[in-house]
Image 1: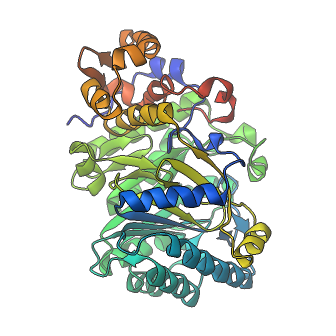
Image 2: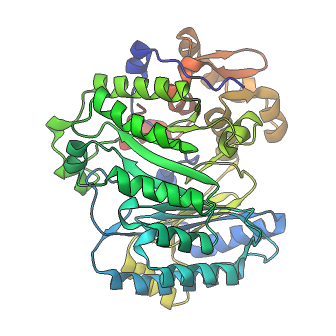
Amino acid sequence: MDQSLQFDLPLINRYDKAGPRYTSYPTALELHEGFTDIDYQQHIAKSNAAGGPLSLYVHIPFCDTVCFYCACNKIITKNRSHAQPYVDNLCKEIAMQGELFDKNRVVNQLHWGGGTPTFLDYAQMQQVMTATREHFSLKNDDSGEYSIEVDPRETNLHTIQQLRSLGFNRISLGVQDFDPAVQKAVNRLQSEAQTFAVLTAARAEGFRSTNIDLIYGLPLQTVDSFSKTLDKILRVSPDRLSIFNYAHIPARFKTQRQINDADLPSPDVKLAILQNVGQRLSEAGYVYIGMDHFAKPDDELAIAQRQGLLHRNFQGYSTHSDCDLIGLGITSIGQVGDAYSQNVKDLESYDQLINQGKLPVFKGVDLHEDDKIRRSVIMQLICHFELSFAAIEHSCAISFGEYFADELQALAPMQADGLLTVNADGISVLPVGRLLIRNICMVFDRYLAQKQQQFSRVI
């Protein structure tokens, strides 16, 4: 499989508009409060009848300090005692959810995100993991993909040893940028020594995959400054890199109002940074997975993509398309059967519902047949850059040309621009179109017209 990228800056500029990241289709904007915990339980029953493995996402919302760029659901506090009531409630939710799923359904994937999961101390992390093992069927042979996001500023060798003992075998380190001026502008002061000590410890303790998160488009960044950060990252050679486009939406995210708009790099500079990133990572042997993700050719994501098995869910790219995803903790989103559901977003509501013995679901969406057909199309394109009409026709019982006649016509200008090819067999996204895969997927999104202003720009 050709996993290369090609930059055409005039094309990128022309297509750079707002659009979804398609961690789901329909997107999370379609979740509504008419969907209740009863609806969720009905989908769990159907899911149990179908069987199959599970994926768990655990949301730890706490952070010690605020990063000004952050758009995550988090709670900023230096008072570590705030975590214990949440941990207790989280364990109760784990027990409630665990009772609803058949015990023979093995957890192939587990991910702790946030916030900052390592805000919890070892006893609290152990409490959550013990509850998880008690109420779900976790693997005991280290063959599961059990990952955690860590902040290197509050992680050390001892923490890494503890995380490994709890069963985690994959780790993601938040970095964003090493330039001191950029770090100061976004209120995230983090040394290279701190970061690489954690990476070295993780490898020594047997973590099988290491990921580093970077962000381009932050205040005061230049092509040269970000290239120096890349130099340092490439020297330690992580298995994966997530290089996100900073979406500056201060009207929606209050902490971003502390960033000086005048310090943000221009669109041309952002594109130049991204072009440099693509070139440098390609030269270093990484392949482009899609969206913001790069991986070494022997990484599981790259292998899954070549084998046509790559999947995308609310946590990003995944190797397990066969798993139902269960969200645990405030704000978490799950995908069980033909529905998406989300938990309440604040600690008070979560506490009240949990202590009433109720699932903390407050909104969701049932997927109808058109949603499922369009999801299949979008997921194939965004994961594999290829789409077989025959495969969709077989799985969805439609005539692709008839069902998507308008969409195929809308792709014609993209084909003329060299983003893709369309023939009798299907759609192939060309190297110049891969950075613009969101634009291509947007053609098949029937909800987009009235919601486009709520998304960040694609590049």
